[in-house]
Length: 186
Length: 453
Image (cartoon, rainbow over all chains, first blue to last red; front, top):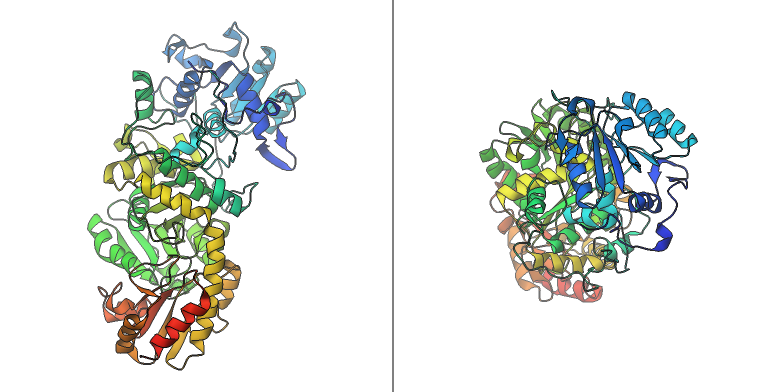
């Protein structure tokens, strides 16, 4: 299993503290590559709220990809309790996770976000990550006030793929330009 | 991966309510200039060897890490390579580079410009669907649209793209796209892209623009509201007349799921185990579908060697286009003053009806492919193409070499006289593709050949 840190352009300056302001000044919803890479490089355990056991749902795609990159992904879904997804038992609630959680990755509609954020703060998660299409500015402000880093309207898989260069394998433009040799981290 | 999850019996994940977009987002911007991206985009150093130029991955297939990795690749759950009909690292580098130059989100490269049109239409159209296209198109496109596409169940209406009312009137409930060239081949017509984008937006359909003759150095249709851009990379992108290639670029801004017009993108796809492409891949859902279904099943893959040649060509695109347009303007001015020439249709000339639109959409130059008319008609055209020495008489455009053709007897000969005239390729018409040679030499050669007409 490779490390989840296999991000292209492994300049130490990129490993900034994810608690640093992520947003690009003046561009709401924009995040620096340094901030996103910092989160992905530090995170080990991801609680995926709204994870689906259905193989062709987007959350399943993301979970499988992140597992392959070395992340521990814990599926959270009250309706699927008792099942396992990709080998991981499903838990009903963030409070049911006994180990430290780095990132709470949200695959739920925006109305569900405030409750999830409260629980994320409660269990000491470091990052709240809302998937593509999900915004909740008030909940984001609550999380940031509690010291969490917040990403909205982004996909962990796509961002990992973009920053590692893998997204370009599908002909996708990630606006990554570098003449540095990527460092392979085993 | 988006989260527009549809509730399943055992699944609490569900769909966010999103408002349909009525205005286009700005095109993707880059921190880097277009000259930098022409050299660097898509081609970081190869990580294992450090090879600075992109290797030609002349391989058909790729070893899986293990069975689970193979399964993930076939299910599109991870990024990676399976088979070079679908993806190849050299081809991917080219796709990422052209997507970057156009300010697009993603791209699929294929074997030719015609294949690019087929792949784009196949991804958007169902049998019985309809499209509206400019009637001022490259003759090969007109033939493809008029004869071959109807056999796939796609009916088109060819309209004058300058006539807003005619374009609107041609749209039916089954219309799935509007198609135009940004700079028309061969007539030199510049199309009002913002007007067409407005019509497309009003009807919830994408504007598809063939940007071949302008190249992304001169015009970037996404900045004017287009949703998909197509190129024959055989022309200015490759630029050296070495390699065939085509590409389909997606802006990433079109909402394919808003009203059920595009079930192939917004509904579970039986050709891919019930995967819903737009929901799963978000702003590059079209690109993934075009690759994973249209390219996979129709099969017009681009060879990695051609991709390499085109990548190399693109590195000098900005430099070449500067010379192409300055040479073209000087040749056009020479022709305009020549007694054997009845008219010159170059959008860079003040006399052109497209001049104002060219200043707006193509401020760096109106390309280097244009037509002119000979006072001596059809026979004069034949004598001219047989009389030139430096200009090559052949059926291509966008080469470093200057090219000349008489469309009525070649590229447009399968059209009726009426269609030829409508397409700007009447019997007296000569088409030039002005190369990057010494412009005085180009003018001298034309001058001696015109004396023979």
